[in-house]
Structures are given as C-alpha cells and as structure tokens.
Amino acid sequence: MSRLNLADTSPRLPNLAHMSELLVIDDLHASAEGVEILKGVDLTVNSGETHAIMGPNGSGKSTLANVLLGNPAYTVTKGSITYRGEDITEATPDQRGRAGMFLGFQYPEEIPGVSVVNFLRTALSSRTGVDYTVLELRLKVVDAMRELEIDPGFADRYLNEGFSGGERKRNEVLQMAVLEPDLAVLDETDSGLDIDALRIVAEGVSRLRNDERGFVLITHYQRMLDYITPDVVHVFLDGRIVASGGPELADQIEDAGYDHYRSGAATS
Ligand code: ADP
Ligand code: MG
Image (tube, rainbow, N blue to C red; front, side):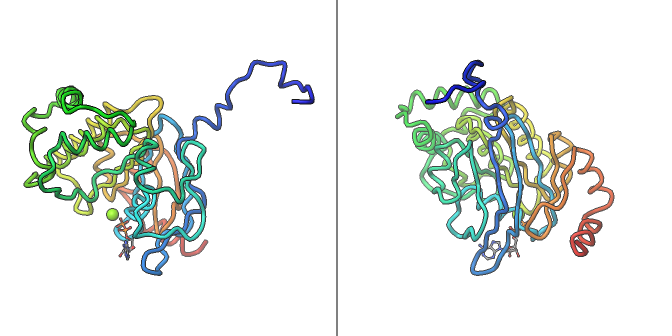
C-alpha cells in the first residue's frame, strides 16, 4: 500500500454486505437439447435466508435446480452463478458439493448395493476431505437419526431400494443433516409430497435452519409453505422470476393462481 487513506485508519472490517451473499444468480439463461428453458433468472440468497420458488408445471423450476447443481444435461448460454463470491457457473456437481451445495428431492435414484451409511460416508468424505471410518460415520448418522426420529435400522438399508415415498424423504433429509450443506436446494417432486413427507421435509429444514445456512425450496404447491415459512417467495414463470415478495405472496397465489402473472408477463 503506497498511499494512506481514511480506511487505513479504521479497523479492518469484512465487507458484510458481500459476505452475507451466499448465492447470486445473474441473468441466467440455460437450454437443453437446443431449447432455451431458463430465460434470465436473477436471484440473490443471503446467509440464513429461506427462499421459496413457486411456479406452474413446465415453467423451468427443476431446470433451475439442475443448473444450480451443474447437471451436464443443461447448457448455460448466458449469465452466471456465484456461490460465496466465486463464479461456479462452470463448476462440476462434485466441486459444488464440496463447496457446500446440496440438491435434494427431485430425482431420488435407486442405488443397488449401496447402504445409506456407505453413501453418506463417501459423500461426506468428498465434502470435507476427511476420510471418515465406518464407525465415525455411523456415530454421526445415528446422531442425526435420533434428531430426526428415524429408525436406526434404516442406516443399513440399501439406498432407495424399495423405499416408500416417506422413507425417501427421510433419507434425503438425513443426507442433508449429515452433510450440513451451506446451501440446500430442495425441489419438490412434480406429484407433490403427501402430508407425511411434507412434515418430514419441513421438520428437517426447520432443524437445520440457522443464521448461516440458505435454503431454496422449489415447489408447485403452496402446501409446503404451511409448514415452512420462507423469508422470500418468488413467482417463477416461463423461465424466470416474475415477482418476489414475503410469505403473503404464497397465499395470494393459492387464491388467485398464476394467471395474473401470466398476463403481466405477456404485456411487459
Ligand atoms: P418444472 O419443474 O417447472 O415443471 P422443468 O424444468 O421440469 O419445469 O421443465 C421446463 C421445460 O423444459 C419443459 O417443457 C420440459 O419439457 C423442458 N425440459 C426440462 N428438462 C429437459 C431436458 N433435459 N431436455 C429437454 N427438455 C427439457
Ligand atoms: Mg419440476
């Protein structure tokens, strides 16, 4: 530093405004098989915030979740994704996972022959760079299971093989609890969740909510928001966010649907 300025005489405070930004999506455009699906998504999630993204079927919500986690089936054609101040637009899913991002719910695949505990061990080792022994991991999992009131026998079941809908949800919430992501993107299945599954998800999210962690809850249905009160609600239509507001926005959508936004989008 060759020049003194006023700032040099004051304590070095971190730029809190910047540090609180967990995720910044800027004018994101993405396509699959040559068809543009995301058409300019702008979204900022700060530490500690829970955002809900609501929109009709086919509006591109799951595409957004997939692009956020780096699914290679989608190509980003414009714009950027910044996570904790770093441009991750081109990062692999694995790199994003290690950086602390988590995607759940939409595509719970069966992984034959891989137990719940073993899957978590691999995922957590990759996330933290620490090689956990089976025993260490088992202790972590048992702790999380007790918290989430999941039957301990569950740990030895094979991943998603013959899981009921509710068990899949428990498993996803368990993964989230053990992996302790900084940002979780949860995409509700197209068919929606039954009340049991909704409660499991809502309780898991509530337990994990804190001042640092961010959540993006993607849902077609307003019902999820009866269980989790988000800080911000966004309306997603035709590949972008067309309106944002507080939790009351979800109630308005429940009453009036998306038509109002559709006509709004058509004339603007
Ligand atoms: P939502 O989750 O809001 O229902 P999606 O993101 O699943 O919406 O889909 C938005 C649109 O993009 C749909 O028309 C869908 O068919 C299309 N789409 C999504 N994924 C792909 C893909 N991998 N290949 C081709 N088209 C896709
Ligand atoms: Mg979807």
